[in-house]
Length: 429
Image 1 (cartoon, rainbow, N blue to C red):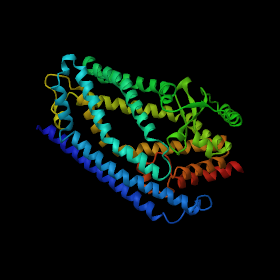
Image 2: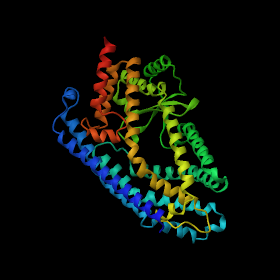
Image 3: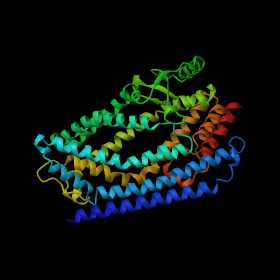
Image 4: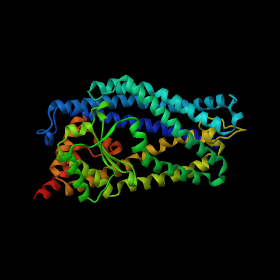
């Protein structure tokens, strides 16, 4: 092992251990803080949230966080197994000796990516099954049957193969044929694919898994349409999704891009909220568009991925990048798929430590969208809608503040509603 390989091995190990300890510390704080405040509803919510609902949210949070510790430990072990313990190297050598190279350099590389994805998916299955049919079931959220779950698994696997393999084949071809600036061309292709997915997902892929029917509540439709017109927003349509066949969780979202934008309401949301509250939730989502949060996130994604592809372009040509992560590069074949997989496995160890910055940006966007909603709808309706959603989704009212800073993409209820109250009172006055 060269000095550079040893340095990378030590750096990788240090980041893995540091990330694991940090995640364990944060989860321990969350468990302790939520458990300590389980016995009483916070004073600000005592009039609107029952003790039973508060304790259910606490228990749900504790169960998810404890299960997350198990997933975290297994994920770290799997990462170590794929890299320094030789799992990826073993898979690569098996494919190299399988005779697939007779069909060209792309076939064995695609086989490596597919094999990695298949094994990784199989390793994750027990956790997915437990989370769906035990944890979510225990708290009354899961509505899926085993047959529906299996159907989703088959469809998602087929969609992943039909969409993923061609784009990966193109990327691998560019890596091997586009010269020393292949990473720039590959970045352009990847970004174009992501933008295309924003257009195709709502009309082609999502309907494979859920039924979408036009909103048929005329009074609500008129109200929502009027709000969108006031805000200068147009969409391809208003749709209701049968989310209740999988989960009791409620949500609403915008999807699509450009002319393909559409508003989607979960049927569970429409059952839980009044028309005025739906109006306020929609106004919040419109706030994201008016503040160009979606565009800003896409630009940030473009910038971060450009840096990532440039880094991959350099690392993929360094022998120590492979040997330092437990893999012997192919001496007579292409190593592009190996480079992609090693980069995908290693980079999250580093980006984990900048995730609080991204979470902070997301929470700031939520505050801005709330302010927009209060200006264009009734803030009291937004408050009551959020309280219902926090209650019905069993979101804890007492998360640990440090855990929030690191993980929460949305502000916790106390912070969000606390900031909202002065604005609502000012609008009412």
